[in-house]
Image (tube, rainbow, N blue to C red; front, side, top):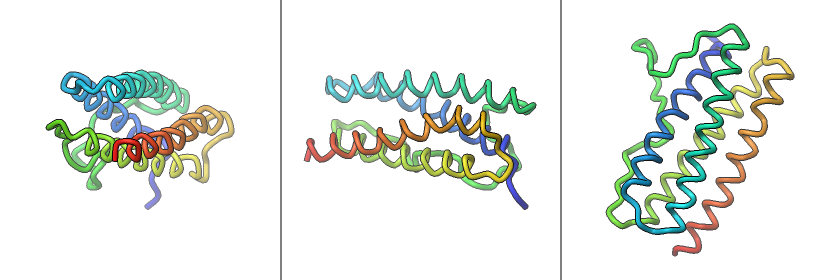
Length: 146
């Protein structure tokens, strides 16, 4: 059975909101200034994305759902395990890259949905582009730490 585009958008929204919380937790525990700056920037980007996603879902006539439904069987988290900041900034960046790659996959999935309209695509494409840019940027940051 094919997944409804509104369900896919709600999955992205749920992940985005969870990601914001993870970023907030990290900003509360990290003292490395360049990483802290990036985390704050990423948090703002994701807050703006979540607002746009809510508008898109509502505009398509869907109900905004910001938590996992009990019937959902697939794991919906973009980050596979909790990010522990034991002073290991490298691990933090590896987890952020993982999250951005999963986010990229979700955006590609919804953008290739057979019945997605042009306006929705045009609204979501910048999020995909920013995610792709983040991956490249974070990989460079990670390599700079090694």
